Structures are given as structure tokens and as C-alpha cells.
Length: 235
Image 1 (tube, rainbow, N blue to C red):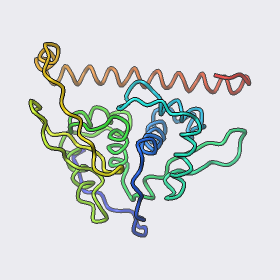
Image 2: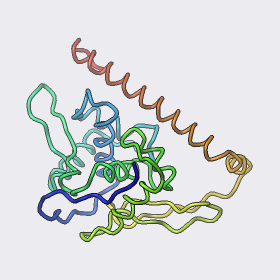
Image 3: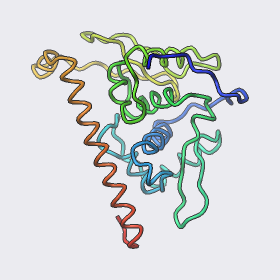
Image 4: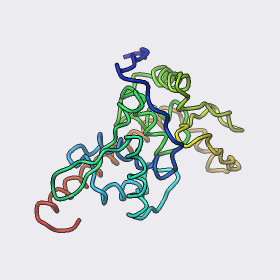
């Protein structure tokens, strides 16, 4: 399905949002991601949210946040209603509210999620990395929703970065934490020259396979978590 401009939900104008910290965007990204990848355990407990923030795969930069730090980020995000707390049950759980607060369609939420979790990326990388959250029909669909986010009347949420030396495509970054800090590109190496010779289709296939394996691992973690909860043992 080709890109079609999305109609804004019939709601009041979105409130002005504060500049979010890295950990706050990480918390939001994890909640959005796990809603799709492990729906059986969503909304997330604090322990699951901490594990998702400190995850070593599909994350850039890698962080090591404590339970207290994640809880503080959650409390901060409750202010603009970006995170909601679920009542009932033995464990407090948390869910995101980005779609309603930011008045965005699922496609835009998926793009912001991947940018918050993985850092700046090209449109091709975004299409592949969004596969588990939303399946874009083609690159033009990704570009359409990115342009929509970049031209929002209430303020841009993404920006197209200048092309780095030796790069073939421009990357995009989110603006929820203010202007992005651009990391200097690493000098070319024999290994990077070898990667350049790999076809785009081969690289895309590898990334899709990795994403599929990551999804299966997350699903297994969810099953184990449910079993541990039913048995009353710690995971």
C-alpha cells in the first residue's frame, strides 16, 4: 500500500512537550516496541521495562540504567501523559500513550520508536527495522511519513541530517530530545570496504533474518516470564 497522507485524529491540539532525556526516549521506545513484539506481557512491569532499556540488541547507544532511574523517567513521562500506569494485579504495569498525546498514526509512531531505540538511520534502514512494528510497502511510504513528521505545524519531530562523508544516503533523527548530536564518522577500514560490496538486497535479507530471530527470542522471554509468574518464581 502506497503512502497516503494521514488525517489527524479529532482531538485538541497536542500540548507542548518538554525536551526528553535519552532515558525518557528509551522508556517510550521500549514501551512502543514491546507492545508489538511481546503483546502477551504488555503493559510492562518495571522489571521488564528496565530490561528493555538495557537490552544489548537493537539499541544505540547502549545504556545501563538502574531501576530507580527508569522509575524516575516513568514519573517524568506521566506529566505530559506519554506514559500511563495500569491499576490492578499484583505488579504495577506501564503503557505508552504516544498516539493520542502526539496525535500521530501508527506508521509515524513506528518510525519514531525505531529512531528513539536505534539512533539516526536512512529510510532503507528504517523500513527494515520497522518490520515488526509496521510493514511499510516501499521506501516512498517511509519518506512520506518522515516528511509529514518533519513538517508538523506544531513543530518538527524528525529531521533529515546532512550526508556523512562516503555515505550513499542521508540519515534521519528524531527531535524529541532536541537537536541531535552528530557523531563523527569512523575512518574507512578494510571491513567497511567489504560491506560496501555487499548488495542492498543481501544486506536487507540479513537484517530481516536478524529481526525475525530477535522477535522469536522476545516471544520466548515473554512465555518464560508468564510461566515464572504462574509458578511464583523469579525470572
